[in-house]
Image 1 (cartoon, rainbow over the protein chains, first blue to last red):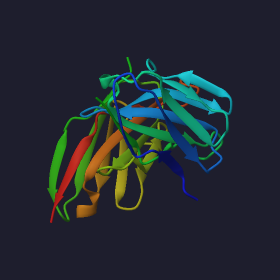
Image 2: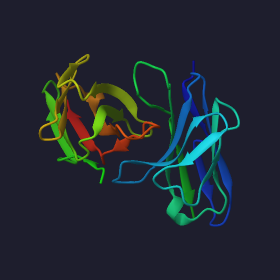
Image 3: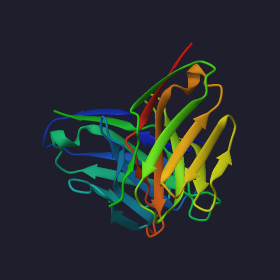
Image 4: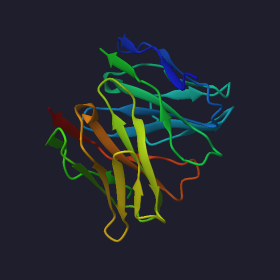
Length: 114
Length: 114
């Protein structure tokens, strides 16, 4: 049971390039989330999903797109990267029917946009 | 609006001391609170949670206290160890967010000296 995994761990992009971050969870969780974490700030929600085939905007969605084609995977896409998107990205998942509302986080992807 | 904040950005303690990390929240509609620990280069890790119908909950060496009157949350760590050094975040879940949106504070760094 690997929990929540993220790939890649590190990435450097040039302004205008595109990329996709992959999040996978093996806990059969319904809910999945993408956050970004910037220095001196807490985690901010980008997009989330309440189930396979559904996505919705969070607090800071601009410049990102997501897809949840399979229950276990949640993809975060940057179509045209900007330096302002330099950050650490965390994926999380949560069981909709569990005894706890806790979100479980992956190890993060550190993205630098030059 | 919603906000979760911390009084102290950095807390330095000696090994064996008890640590207290504080958090203030502003949304009186929040009904669930979580403390996360984040070590350098890793994702947030669940420590302990508490629901609004409780004022105290204990775990292994950790205790969370909730004072709804003054909208204050604290995390107490007994016999602090060097391995406890990390950034600690409090997070709240407002009752009116159907997808269980977590609102994070900015974090407090705990430094434990041997």
